[in-house]
Amino acid sequence: MLTEKSQILKHWAEHFRNVLNCSSAISDAAIDWLPQVDTNNDLDLPSSLPETIRAVQQISSGKAPGSDAIPPEVYKHGWPRLMAELTTLFQDMWRQGQVPQDFKDATIVYLYKRKGNRQLCDNHRGISLLHIAGKIFARILLNRLNGHQEQGLLPESQCGFRRHRGTTD
Image (cartoon, rainbow, N blue to C red; front, side, top):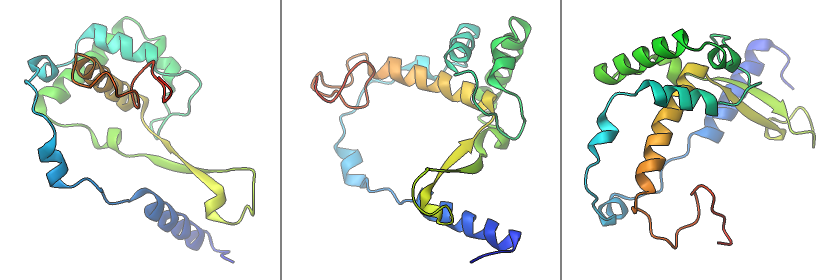
């Protein structure tokens, strides 16, 4: 049994390193097999104020923030000035092709699953705490990609990983 804090932290880090780092099983041949689609130049445009507003509205309230400690409610109630500033930040990021490292880093906390031995790492769930501004930016990208893929890119028979569809459709 580990008793020193540094040993415990190293053990947790190793556990999550093993859980989260799986190699990709997608081969280059499978990617080459995918059909080619026309380029949608709208995907290359910097984000807009309406996109930022929509993304902020979609972020869940009451969620834990990342290391900046800014909760989602600050963004939700920061209209209109904060939305304009956030949009400007996202546009600058887009033009520079740079995402701040803080948006990419997560603080992982572990929560007990309420079953089994509490001292076993496998009986805990890792939760990634991310900067809410980074989540908003990611939501803008997700909204764009979802809108693009729903424009006839996927066969009607594919129901998995699509909004408003289930495995029984």
